[in-house]
Amino acid sequence: MMGERCQIETYSDPLTSTRFPFRLAIKEKLNRVKRVESMHSFEMIKYLADSRRMDILRLLMAAPATLTQLARTMKQSPAWIRHHILALESADLVEVSEIRKTGRVTEKFYRARADALLLQEVILPKTAKPAMIFSGSHDLALEGLTEQFQKHVTILSLPVGSLDGLVNLRQGLCQISGSHLLDETGEYNRPFIRHLFPDRDVEMVTLAYRTQGLMLAAGNPKGIKRISDVARSNVRFVNRNAGSGTRLWFDTELRKLNISVETINGYDTIVKTHSEAASFIESRKADAALGLQAAAHRHGLDFIPLFEERYDLVLPRENERPLLPLLDHLQTASFRTELNALTGYNSSHSGEQIPL
Image (cartoon, rainbow, N blue to C red; front, side):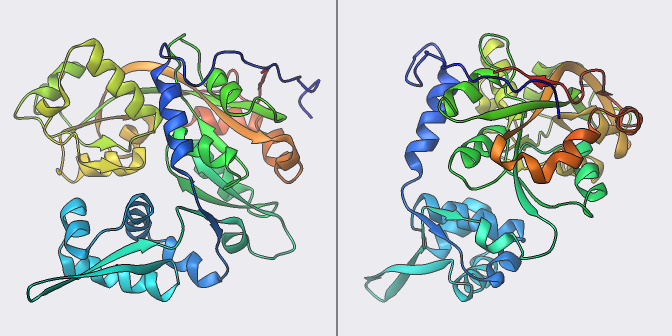
């Protein structure tokens, strides 16, 4: 399909190397996965399709919690949390782990039924065409591709960020991932892939180069010009989820500028996609976010470009066959035309296989 098959070289730097803190983050994430349970009913699909319930489930996979604790963490009412907990209980995803009585107060602690949930059996429907799970970084071009190729393969997209997506791929919780992780060496994605898949035959294919920067309210009423301006007290920021390539770049930049996260109004306001961040700003819930130029353009926002990054698709070769129509399309002139219609996207390297 894409030239000679590359041979995987063993990457000798250990995950425990103190020179590479992002790799330590990978090891910590892997160590958290203890119990993996296969989900067994289509009902679970419907409930996990709601991102709010996914957020609750992730919190309960990390540690048991009460309705009050979840409400405080998610900044919602206990009644709102209870409504979603009941739905998750009915789908057999959540259970009561402990009941504590303190005087007249009785508290129920809820937990997820597993530390990690094996998704394939639930969200991969039994149909004539293949179905696969994408778990990784959100991308606007990929959204269009998955819709365009529905006749060939059903792809369920779970945007969890680059780092979590690669960990999910290693754990077998998805079939394809997307990443734009910048290593301390200045290289995108390959060092992380070598660390996570030293003994597996995987391929990495460039989807596109993308421009990221500051997405700002139309007209830039706060006069924001650079990253350091988001730390001003009158600027409301909306952040990306931990483990996303965008968030990792932002946190690294804050360290370089010696800016404390406590000074940023909205650092803990989290969204999972570039589109969500742009919508926050468009609806005047925030003044600035780090994100894609294409997302800013779609929502009529001002934009200050900061860097261009490489976004790669990552998949084990045993998962390649159902995705061949999509992967082949990356090398066509028609795809380059489609991609160039997205502001801030560069298609000159689309479809190139990155040797590992």
